[in-house]
Image (cartoon, rainbow, N blue to C red; front, top):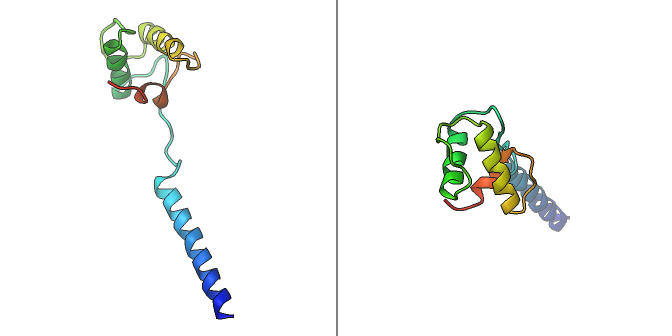
Length: 97
């Protein structure tokens, strides 16, 4: 009886630990998505990376306009990614500087 109680206590402890870990470090973050019309620091970082890699020739102004959209599409095509003209964090941030 005591052996079963110990096993149940350990199992419950592991479940609670896994739940707490998932809530703190799991997939609870919302992935950012920049698209035509977006603006801000994220767009500025995307533009700078695309410019460094030769896909973007416009000003790094933090405004996701037609030039940024075209550069993202070129980048996605060159790297075998889905060409939806939107920039998900994984698309750009997964690649170097």
